[in-house]
View 1 (cartoon, helix red, strand yellow):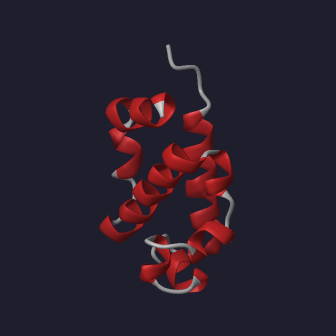
View 2: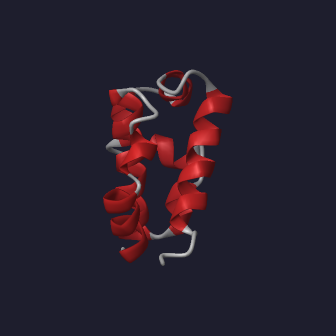
Length: 87
């Protein structure tokens, strides 16, 4: 929870690198991470769980990021930032 809060407060620029729909997916991933832990960042499984799945199937969600590779890169960056030193 602490890591997710830190990311939201101190790294908002990360989210603005993406369009509004992709930002909402990333925010939902972060919420899932906060509530259930790191396994919630496993792609593609988490994309099939509400509320993320409301955005469409895995390919439709990937298209929000510009494709599957870009989505993976975004989630990888999210994970990296979550586990950076909090200081």
